[in-house]
Image 1: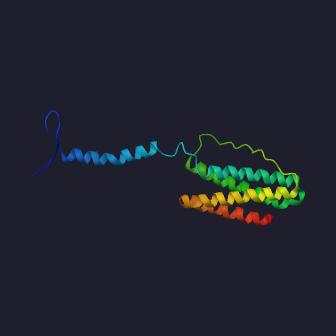
Image 2 (image 1 turned 135 degrees about the vertical axis):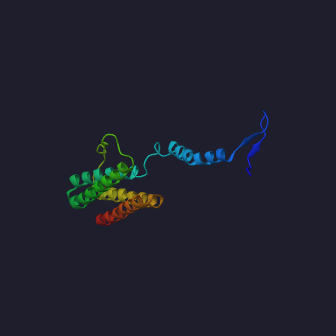
Image 3 (image 1 turned 120 degrees about the vertical axis):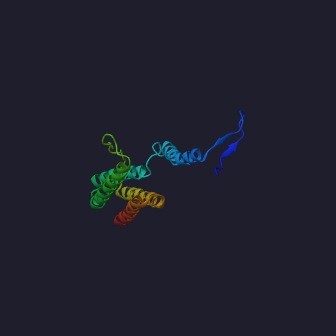
Length: 165
């Protein structure tokens, strides 16, 4: 025996059959996908973008410190090299999930190198501590590989700060 759903309609009772209800439920997943895609993250910046920008800035600062203060040349050079690699890896992950139509350009950030070696060392350590904390804070909010990447960046920044100690 068929048990249709009925409702009151101004023109009299209408009946909705089982097939119509099944079609409605079959369409719901498609509607959910379209809705989530429209409300999705295309407008939201990638959470790794800020880390990549900071890594480029830290690398530029470290390069400037290495050129300006010869006594810090080796340590600052190591920081510059590793923070440049962080920026490259973070940007590669950003581009993996959101491939650009054209290669993205990242101009070298302008940095102010402190005049004294002690102030330059302090500024580098401050930048590394901030990068470490930012990556560590972001790490648990990310899925799988991205979490591991940010955790590695955080640990690396902590190690670099020890190089400067």
